[in-house]
Length: 541
Image 1 (spheres, rainbow, N blue to C red):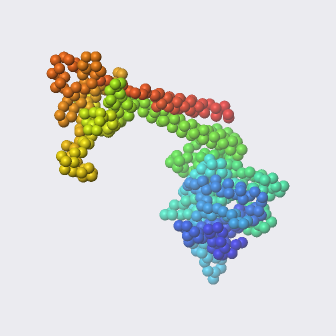
Image 2: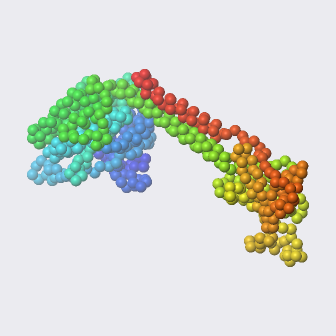
Image 3: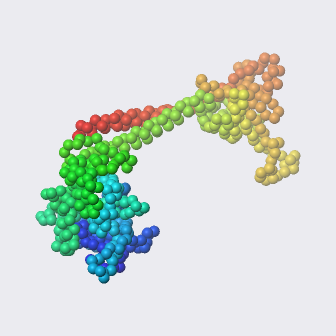
């Protein structure tokens, strides 16, 4: 027994409560975190059990699984840990209902009792729990057992002292206490000890009495070292119901339906917690509690090993199904996105030139590139000689394109050569926002028409502040731009021509289509494997 003030992990002992078959129980106090100062229930396992070789690892694994077990009717495990030989578990604290119980003798002062368990309620005030109250309690216990059994957790030590109760606004709520601890106590049998008895020499008479009571709520012919099965818990619920009827101070006629249910439960008439809950006296709408009757035969109850194997198959199927659904969904989504990208690119390339691809014409200085866009975008070209004060042109120039009258209008500008005597300004005076004007630049616009059939750009005209230039041809010379006025006055010597700029690079493979086909094929394969799962699982059974 630990003394008051002893530290165990993040907890401190306040007082000892009781010793049972699963270990010593204490009221503890949280010393860390947001719940600092709050009470908690602390369970300390036997030292003889804790010092078993390999128990610490087994203890950690089981407690991690129990931490995930939550829901109505389950007294949730909040924390656990190990300090030297001390293996402890902590739960939230239930204060219980405070009453003053009279002692025998006229001069004896009444004692204060806190009612926390079904055993304490039926011992101190046996007429307080009515058949309606028992229904409320049993619904919570069945909901807890149904969830626990689906997780493969068997209580194995269900009795009135392991049923916690709390009454709020006249309504009882119940919880299963010490859920899963029976498996920890059986650890010595799991590792093959010669002695299968889990009663330790250090256990007090109080603990041995607790284990004797536990035996009254187990099936005949079973012991604490046997591996518990689901029907143990279902039969224990019936035995608890029968025990409540015997302890109650209410008239027996009020318990007729409960006595019938308890008799069926004790005779293993219910194959599952859901079936037992459906048969509870006064039960109306079981599905409102989120519990449905499984589609199983009402024949013999499955053994624990058969149940584990069935659930292992169901878990494996669920994992495989979830994985294939995810892979099918992701590959399908990726395939559709790639296909959508391919379709959009094909529509775009039917209406616009290939973005940032150079279009050129042999024998002509001009080159063009158009950036990506729907109504406008960046453009790149070559400075014509007419706008180059230092030479024949040929430098790169960046501008922008817009759509105008079904054509691509490419607008460019280039800074004029500085004439300090004429302008009266030095070069550095043109630096800065607002330091230049439109007169300081050559500006011109090239109008191009896109032909989707052969993927080419035709130069329709070029215009600047003074002239409009059109493509023409004189004799056998190569086509070039001529001022529009000159073309009209040439008396046929200069004839209209076409300046057609072709892509300098061929388009590569459509990788988006290739990826779309690959992802959609993978999606189809995952879908086919997904459809095979039910048949494969049935064959495996």
